[in-house]
Amino acid sequence: MALPELIYVAPEGGTIHKYNLSGGKREFIRFICCYLGSCRFYKNIEEASEFLKTKSQGT
Image (cartoon, rainbow, N blue to C red; front, side, top):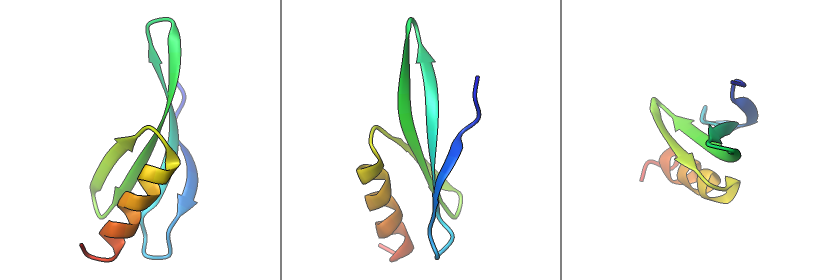
């Protein structure tokens, strides 16, 4: 199993990682977005970026 790959670091300190998950005979790419200990998986980088933007703005 591969480790997550760091693909973005926000100036406010949040991160987005790309992660390959195995599921049966397929492999899925997911994005993990973390900010101040709050992390979530997303199917695409746009959703992960939106989460990071809202968290870093304090909403």
